[in-house]
Length: 207
Image 1 (cartoon, helix red, strand yellow):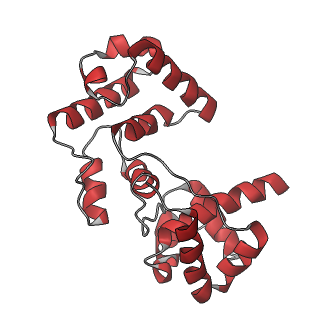
Image 2 (cartoon, one colour):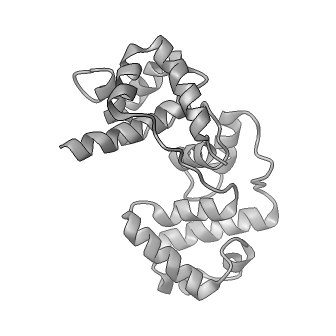
Image 3 (cartoon, helix red, strand yellow):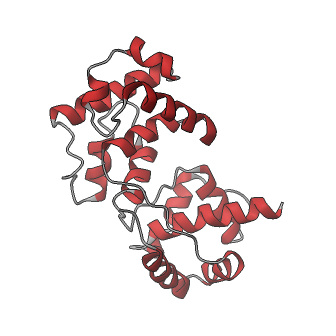
């Protein structure tokens, strides 16, 4: 399960102690709510379904899959199907292929989501072996579903934008710059990412 509300507060307070700009961001936006996901196959499948579509579209596709297939917690449900059989549920041909790849990896035991490597980079590499799961998707899974506190999705556009705003930078930092900026925040960078998304929503609401 992801980082709890209590852990987020503790981690952000630790960052604020060394980064006054983060303390000001907390004063401005408040502490973020936790972003919790269940550990396991279904959460990764949801990640694939939700790639490059709106939240509403992703929910619609997921509901169609559930209505047509039933138990989406069991990878065998999808592993037994073909791309063409998945397409009527709203998946593109590419995403259907990704869903089949994930189901096959989990069903065969090649990817054991209950025993990912303890090292974050090794866990990201293991997840990224699945077609359709890149670094960002792997990081989001490890942060939200496993609660790994030092995951830092520096390639996320909203994280880049909001870290730039929080730190008062003149322009959005690059992925490399975003990664370097957060080095002093180890081992609490996961909380900083969740704070960035929260702060981004607050900024958007004000606009």
